[in-house]
Amino acid sequence: MESLLRDGFAGGSPMEVLNNVTARRSAEVRGGDLLTINMLPDSVEAGKQAGIEDIDVLEATDYYKTPRGKAPGGATSAVYFCMGAGMGWDAFYLSEILLKQPILVVIGDKP
Image (cartoon, rainbow, N blue to C red):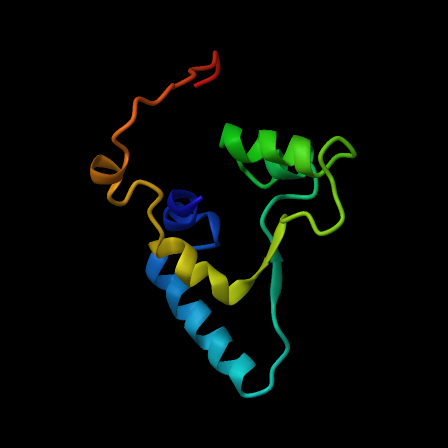
């Protein structure tokens, strides 16, 4: 997820997003409404029309935005200012030190 945010999924270059997040957070601290954004398009078709080609995003949309995976309280939206923290998160930080056990990697047929 963090790489998607850094690569423009949040609507711009990383610095543009961070500047927007900072401005938005400042407005919210001053009493403005929280801005909640959708993390996924409304449908696979809408995602493709918006130019999204990332198979992970499209398959997540196919699951989480249909009755198959849709759930009350499901995490398909987020408060916008959280994008800043998400951009800096790295799922593999210290993995070479902390992950000392063997790991099973499953590779599918879709790149």
